[in-house]
Length: 223
Image 1 (cartoon, rainbow, N blue to C red):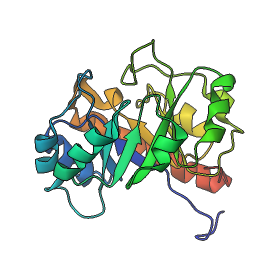
Image 2: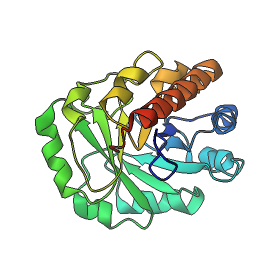
Image 3: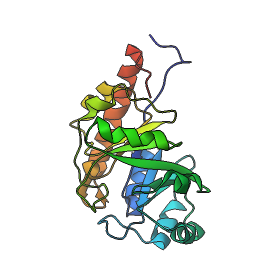
Image 4: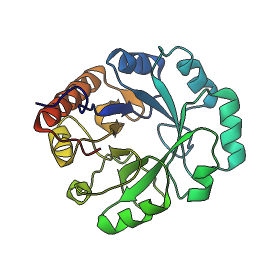
């Protein structure tokens, strides 16, 4: 059995929040972060003013993450003047220098379809979100997954978060690969784009926590 010293818990982020009730329900379920999409081509786009109003009503210890796709620095600055984000998620083709220049904590998304796509990760000195590679011009939110087996022995100096097509039906498969630092879900807990389903969120959180506990009993500590 693992000791309290080496036990770890897979964190959960629910992304694409557009409604206060969904954010509050996610918080009640114990998620670690909720995500807001500031990419106006996404069906889950949210106006910064509306996002700020939701975040102001979040309870303590729930992190607010802002998702951006190929933004200018000026656009990020404008959003941050309104929205009290704790983390910036860069989900496009941003460079390592652009990531390093941010004044908030950064999580960089890497689009993956095979092990070759992981080579670019060496350039980024920050936590990585490993997402399914979407068609050209599309940046996440497709509900598609990829071959996670390529990630079993993947090493990075910063935390790894898995995304892309996660849902209640594949949590066990995802968690069998390794003990992730975090899982990021959006469409897998929705009734329609941007509208979260409370029961799906509840089932997802329960499944992740259960799988994380099982990994701990097995001594799986690769995050």
